[in-house]
Amino acid sequence: MRLPALNLFWRFFFGLLLAALLPLLATWYIARAVTVENAERLAESRLKYEASVIASRADGWLQVNYESLAEHADTIAMRSMLPELQRPVLVAITNHQPWTQLAFTVAPDGMSLARSDSLAPINYSDRPYFKTAMSGQPLGQIIAISRTTSRPAWIFGVPIKDETGKVVGVLAKTNGLNELVDQIANAKIGDTGRAILFFPDGKLAGMTGAVFDKELRDWSKHPLFLSRENVRGGVLRYVDDGHPTIAVLQQVRFGWLVAVQMDESEALRPVADTDHTMLILLLVSTLMAAAFAAIAAPGFARPLVRLTTIAEDMSRGHFDHEVPGVERRDEIGALSRAIERMTRSLRLAMERLGKDGGGG
Image 1 (tube, rainbow, N blue to C red):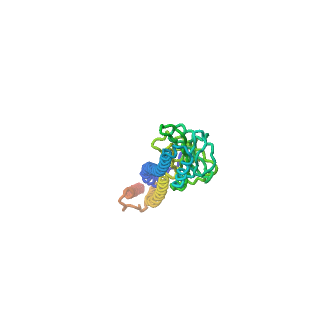
Image 2: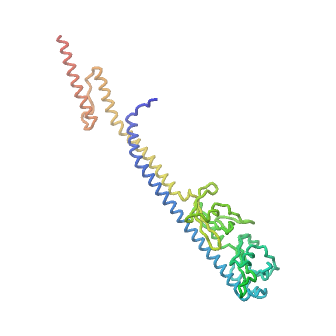
Image 3: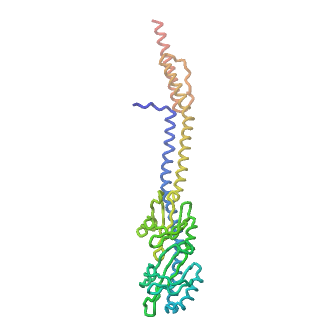
């Protein structure tokens, strides 16, 4: 099917539109690529900074508590494995560190010897942290919901060794994680960002906006935790609840892990702003092209339509028209003058033919 020919308006319109849009589209392409790169770099830098701040605080807090317990485990009172000597030290530990909920010692058989709360002995032989510390490892640890506060608590133990280096017991304590968890729960990272604290086994120790109940959430199958060993540069991209997400991971002491994430849509919000601005410019360019075409096309079309009418009348033998536009200094003026000359020539030729015919 043959398409109809375009009139002058549409030719002007598409010509002006093409001239306006080509450089605009090229600018949009370049600006968008630069904006995407800058937005991603800025988002990654922000996430790395937030992760570094949180990880630094968590690392320092964990180290201070470990070193304090290890130093107390090396005292004469603890080495004695005598409850009457150990208990004053355990009470002092609890009073000195307000986040400490309980400090206690455990004999090699797993039964507690002394406790800061003076409760009856409890069998800890099946507790992983006791087994690890009793085997001579520097630290055994678990995370659990505290029965006292119903919030996450860090329960850890260190070996008590005699002068020969033999492990004779375990010094352990239960620490509330309020300081770390509250910092993470109240972290403000944009509109969609959140900070997450993982225990080494993948249990969720803290998260922005999270409310803990009777159980700790298991995130060991989450992309964040699964990718902890393979992330290059600490930056990870994955889909979380249907949302493309950018995250930064940072290892903390004793196998803990800090993650900070945000929706990719928020990170790339400057790109959306750029697209919105460029779409407005495209619309304005289209409207301006239409306006210029509407203004300019009639100025060219009217003289041409008039000259076409004159030419058609000339073909029918009418030569008495006044040709418009002869005063113009453009191509239409040149055409008008040419038609005017042709009109005079044809008029004279017809007059001569008339005379010759009359004479015969």
